[in-house]
Image (cartoon, chains in turn blue, orange):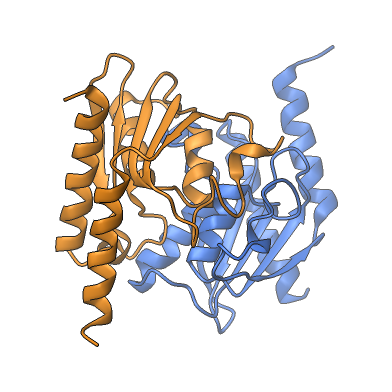
Length: 153
Length: 153
């Protein structure tokens, strides 16, 4: 199993745990320059009463707290869903080197859709972006979650 | 003094306090539906080692924590500088009713510049936006801070 698959698997595990807590199933992992996992998190917006508590935001904040600095230069982020505009903003602010995301998010995404945060001169750092890794598994988790929430019929 | 000026004055006080701590001078205040101040904050990215610790983000998170919910429906945000893409994202997520900002930010703004977060269908709630209130005072604070940081010459 490649390191990429292993890190995205860890993000998918966080997404599943989020679903078990009743949160939208999105998970994220921050990996350091030597391939070490620095932080992992799932969505906690409901549990924390915090609209900023997306998986990417929480994992980045935890990694920064661990390292005691506000930039994660040389670190990579794995996330199961295309980040929204808010999370794309913090990914840029944290100077994440590479962003790997699984499922595309035409409805709320801010990387390949809508605000396309990394494409403007007002964005002072853009990560390399790789998408599609484990896309089917992430999309299945999300579909299952929203189907259950809507209920039968 | 109108309530608008009074709330923006409070945000400017937070911006000045941020500058005294060596942080970029931006301040924000969240005001509830009855005009009560729910939370106020200044930038803390350096102090907290947290790239997300912008004034708007901290004030919104504090107001949500106070109310015990992830949405600030009916609440307004006063901030001394045009929000970046990240902060525009959390303003939308928190369902802020009205956004008042002082100085425009052509370099890093995400409301009237760059990502223009509120203008896309991927943004599921856009606040009413009012800009220019106390603009000169906020811009002077920022100019003074960056002039000092660059040093003489």
